[in-house]
Length: 206
Image 1 (cartoon, one colour):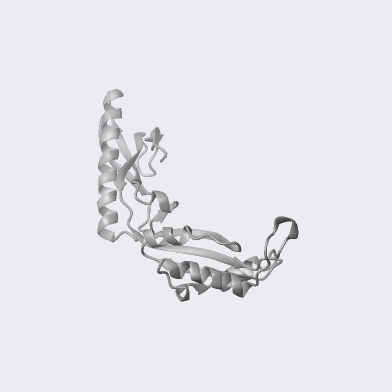
Image 2: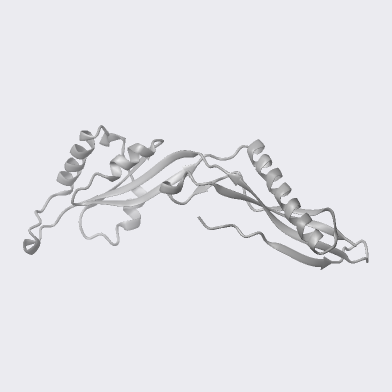
């Protein structure tokens, strides 16, 4: 995971009401957040196999490939009927496919189940997409994370003000970069701690 680097900006702004220059410091505060997996989303394709004499590949129709995959899944306790045909996948890839092919989506709340499916390999099978959807944060959870990030920003700003021999003033502006919707980029790193960021601008007093 990439390390977060605190951002500290020292600026001078002129408010519209007052002609007096106000020196400010902008700090990026952060708080650790744990993401909960809501579901795993898998897209596969099953494709007709066209034989190639030089490679000793036996031709198989799409129906035969599908039956092979059904048998594979049945052996590990997975019901192929729970796979839903992906019409969008079919339409999206139709222009580039030369052989007969079908696309299927599978949704599960179990990481172990998805891993079992991924280990099943047959000719004509391709994994097209693996997506992990995270649970959305509640308003209370989001507010709590923002509060912790603001406190972190305040601590960083105070230390910087001390080094500058300045007095840290009141908060001028708060900007949040995170929404309640959460994202997981890699199912194998879903348990890693992520960061919730808030940019806080403080006044600097002479």
